Length: 108
Image (cartoon, rainbow, N blue to C red; front, side):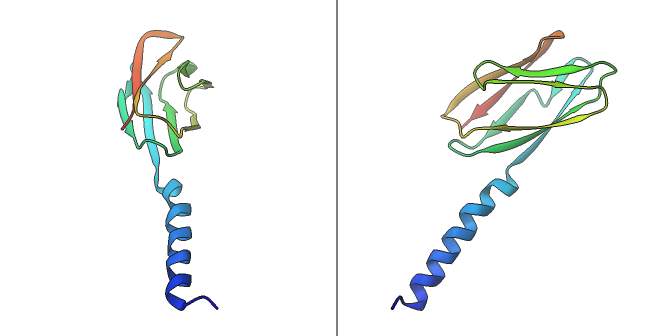
């Protein structure tokens, strides 16, 4: 028979590992031809949820070859984009429709 302490530790470990993702959400806004913020930091080896809001009058893209993402976001809409788990490093993002819109996801 397992001890109550072992059971408590096991339950605590399961609850804490399942709740890590829920708190890892980051908001980004596309406005005036730029990502805001243009650089976001994410924890290494964890899946992260990005909410990218398009505050422009035209469609924008959240695109990254390194993250293997290309999401078109209509004007006034918000896209939910999952990235990771990532190795430590910098992952460039851009908008094909606007050459000045550049940013990065930095995993550290």
